Amino acid sequence: MTMPNTMTDASPLPISDQDIYQAMKEIPGYLDITPGDFKDLYRIVYHHTLQRIAQSVTAEDIMTKTVITVRPETPVQEAADLMAAKRVSGIPVVTADMLVAGVLSEKDFLARMGPNGPKTFMDVVARCLMARGCAALAIREKKVEDIMTSPAVTVSRKTSLLEISALLKEKKINRVPVTDQQGFLVGIVSREDIIHTPLIQRDMIRPEDGPA
Image (cartoon, rainbow, N blue to C red; front, top):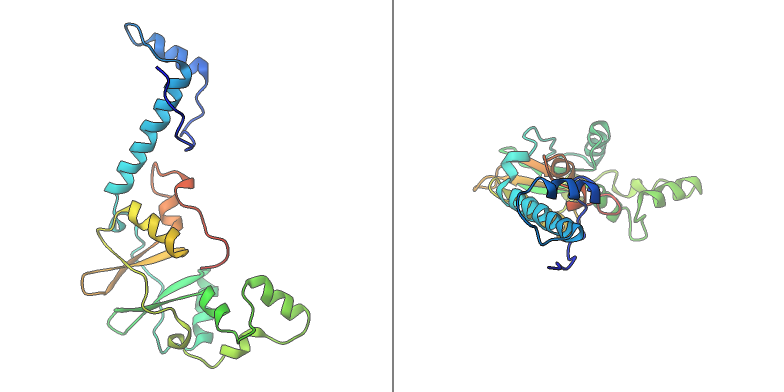
């Protein structure tokens, strides 16, 4: 038989023809399958295994429960200092009782630095090097609620890893808050959390270009 090579996923381990021949020798009886067919079958099985794992693993299994947050009334300067200190590019914005009000990311800062403001981090660097002034001055006196993205994209505790991966790709974001049924923050799932999930390939979800 000849199986079409429909899979482009990388195998978990590089398999040689010699590996396949040795494995086939250990199986009693006649096998009507070529080494190429075996590789295709292995890739397909591996792909389906990943899909099964991605559907069974949920947000509560991989989420970070200790979440760095800010309030809507937090000054933008304070939020920027916090994000820089914690080395994160985005954080949930919550009310006093931990209801998710929005998300604040580097994109929000860049998008609101004036009508002709920078669109990327390198735009900021270029402007500073050309001594045209600090682009961030346009939002210096603002509050988080003035520049945050709202409503926030969120998932529930039971949202599957597969759904979260698809959502991050679709929305071009790098993290998503996890909420309970009432909308209270209970955790956050980032691309890094997904990449570090056991048995999940790194190419299952790729970082988007630019900050998010």
